Image (cartoon, rainbow, N blue to C red; front, side):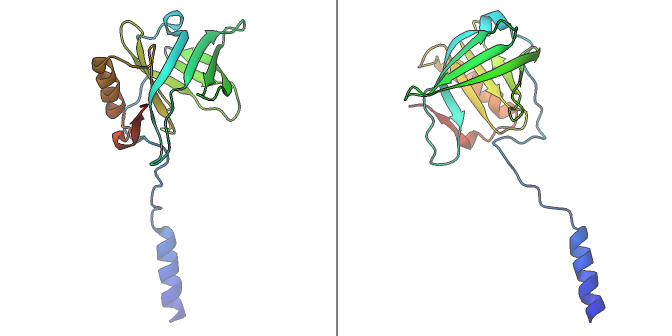
Length: 165
């Protein structure tokens, strides 16, 4: 009887672990940064118009100011509606690929930007976050639709994308 239990326990230990889905993206889906990215055109002020959030969490219209530091890195000042600002510093690793210089930071990729650099989609390869930025608080419907299609293509769970209201 003990041998039977031991065999059962050993067999259970050999079973493949159930994958835990973290973040908002199916990481088996393709993922790439846009080759259209041009640093100088991307720099400047943006407004977050949509983002992925857990059910019940509010998505606010953060202001994102991207500028070049004297070191050549890209500085992002993200300001919440209450005025609190978080500064993130990135090194540009390739077209649209921003690598956080903070040890705990994640890479942030520009997945898509329209031809006029008015709307952009940014996300992390891990799928922990993604958001849509626009130069205006109210993006053009066609560009917002295109941004959503890009996120869907890259495997994001569109049911969790929240538009700022």
